[in-house]
Amino acid sequence: MSNALMTEVWKLDLLAPRKMVLLALADNANDEGTNCFPSVATIVEKCSMSERTVQGHLQSLEENGLIQRKERSGRSTHYTLNVERISALALARKREKASQRLKINPEEPPIQGEVIHNTGATSTPADSAGVPANPHSINTPAISAGVQNPPIPPQILRPTPADSAPITTKEPYLKTTTTSGDPIESCGGDGSIEKLHYPVCSQEECAAIAELMACCPAELRQKTLDEIEGARQAGVIKTNLVPFARGIVTAIHRGTFTVGHGAKISEQRHKKSLATLPLPPQITLDPALIAKGTQFLKNVRSKN
Image (cartoon, rainbow, N blue to C red; front, side, top):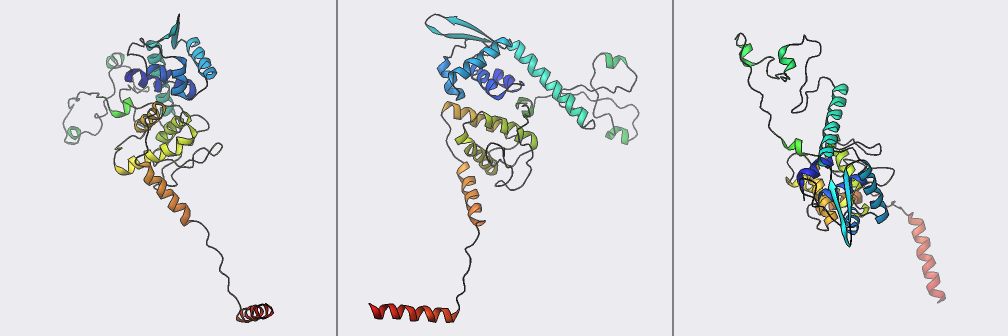
């Protein structure tokens, strides 16, 4: 199992089922993309797809140069994942998303490790050397104190949890609007397929979780979402919900998923649905009608 390779695969711009097949291969490979020889039956079980569908995705991955297959007589096929191509495509996708983000909101600060130069300024030797813009060069304490030409502090780039989080694609069918404070009605899910209640999260997290749900069996999708929201309320998840959701989907495909925090969320939603049921209508009887009914019963008893 190669966590590094699986992280790169998550960043690729692939159809959800095809990405799931590639993830299943990365789960059996080492960091070099070799020593990977799962049987087709194993991939079918992991991805919850038919054998014909898996074979079609394997052929597409090979045609795109992401994997190579070597048949072995009497044994399962040996797969080799093209680590260099996967990393190159993941990096290209990351740069493309960063470029689109800057076009939408040019005032938003760049992502960590991204070099942004002022295109309107005169080119300097530092620009040719690739020196990144210093975010501390504007309104620093030294400038406020009147110090002339204060030294520029070195920029130290350290990896953050966001760097290891998957960069997912936004499919047209994904719902990406959820910032409600009520976990029971925070998100409506995909109205064209099913009604799902999503956890309280940002738009980007909702899009990533929705794509993960496409790889999850339909009968376990709401249980998965309840487990994420329950873990969030319990304080198990401190920042990003996506890695936790990805771990649950992986556990589902391995057959090790059990409901823990999600039972509380499901119970909350059930109680809220009961509280919103309409009350039965109240009927007020006229005393004269009650008297007539009593007399009718007496007549029936006297005849019997």
